[in-house]
Image (cartoon, rainbow, N blue to C red; front, side, top):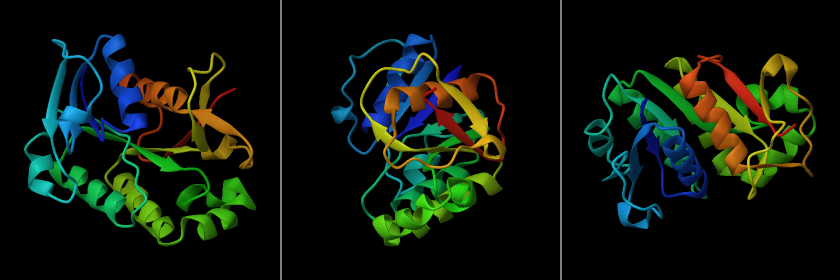
Length: 202
């Protein structure tokens, strides 16, 4: 497949890009500074500059045949919504977006921990929810992951919908590599279009 990875130089975006190349896909990797994308040049990898606050730069890369996977994360409110709006406006074939478990549509399933996230994230909470809803309204899939950590792909990983979501355990983590693998599975064989999916390590 021809895949486009947004925020490819970040830790999750880098995991998505690396695994996509290993699976034999060709990747267009978008980063504000492509020079920071810590992967060697290869025939299957195209590094391009793009900034979510410049929608024209995103539209110049993404087209109607694009399958976009986003690893976009930020410590500033407004970035996620800007990214979601820029990607949706570009009109790709599909969007697979990274969100956070316990926000928006997964808040009820997460249980009491969702209230703690509201306080922890501050003004970024609404930004996450608005970005997710923008992607979902466009028919995209949003992956709500728990606390991210380093580490390999979990051998017992699986992905569920909200109806099978466990309560959010604030002490548990999931590796970025596991989340990346789940998002790539969805790109290859869509199971959760227009809804929220939860990648689980075991």
